[in-house]
Image (cartoon, rainbow, N blue to C red; front, side):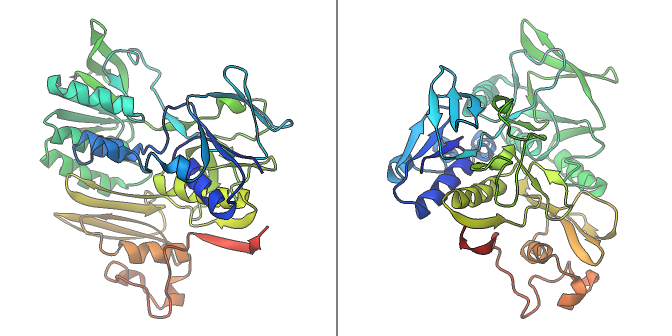
Length: 422
């Protein structure tokens, strides 16, 4: 069996490990256009903030490929997929045959289609080279402008402020991270950031990035205001890397739709990570769950099934947890929604929200006080009626564990289907 994986991020690495645990002899190849594998984009913000060393960006030892007998094909860009011939076509015309294929090509940061986006000093944060450029410029920076107030934008803002740089966050929506936070949670975080000296503007849109001598100097807003800054960091989302799949026969829909076994519409071809489109287990909507936990779990399921077993990916829900200016923040499920039954508890140093629909827990936000996180996450994964567990909504913000006899293992991330092997 010839296993080929396109991409050396978490989905690809975890898939290779899952394959090797079940197939000790067949060849596994990882093909990637990057010069190294097993790098964590999530860790780049910690490196910028001085909370992690450069080597902490890698989540596997350099000897990983040799230990797992994986053939690394670095700096080799895939330009086409011939599904009928079961071959990858590389940039220089080379061909890579496969029996089972995993597409784990990840995503690329979106660059705003506005004048000035190509100026020196405009960055995203996805690659080590991006972090290198940002760190190299910090000694001469006075102000940095962050376009986008999502998870990554907030983390970068906090880290840059720690480096002594004046920070302004510009968010197009009327609240920060609208898929994660409601208006009250956003306002709490805006006030928190303000106390730390980080300015936030919501409901605003950048019209143009201004420059002098080819270098960023300011941004002009659609309301004509101008904000000065020597660096602009765009954090407005990512786009799945699927251009090479045009004409391949692989179905594309804002990424690659897969079933719970991480299979595409073409037999023998799987997809996992940022490039995969899965069904949210809370809302039932098609989503790109572009998070580290999702990529690693999807990779494990895909690799296991590629090796002939039968696993399904479950508990596919939005989950983000981080510290912002020293305050713990966690949001899960359909947390940005306001419909349904909403329970809120708030104070000067905390904000907590529970969202219920049809008697079931569908989302929560915890800021400042997060001790109930494990209990709430387990209850939400159960997808059971609160009444079946003998719970009332008002008790949820006080309990820290499920009722006796109603246990749940967070480790049960997958369910076996008809048997251990397919």
